[in-house]
Image (cartoon, rainbow, N blue to C red; front, top):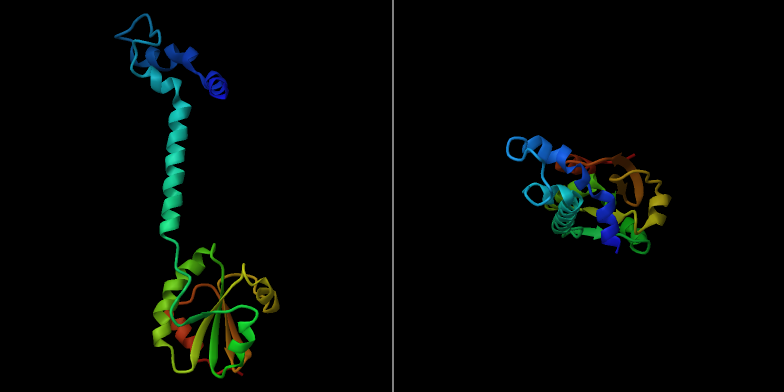
Length: 181
């Protein structure tokens, strides 16, 4: 029933002679097509079905592509901090670089492979950790993070520097060597 209503609402076959046969078949069919002799008519009559199929195929392909290209959020040598582990991470001696990030953030996704590349090059005593702002909103509020990605550099438990945006490997290594105040 619903499909028949949709077909009737969007049926443009009444304009068939003007739209198609009157334009394409002037030489062949002088009397105009009567919805049976023309090979174009079925496509015109159900144009909305063709468009719906195209949109559905596009959406499915986009969904599959996003699922298959999702960035791994687990990086060897990088700690994922939460409310309980955050004070412990700060209490350890040395430099701690914390990346406040979000899974929906495009620049954060671009930052992940750079972090993975940087971890083996870090100087002795320097660590990298991550905080997912969606999962740890209390930490995000406590450190007044308003945009992602945001990097906060801690030395011996005290914040010494803050920077926003995607950081290159060289920038991360410079942050790791900051002396602080």
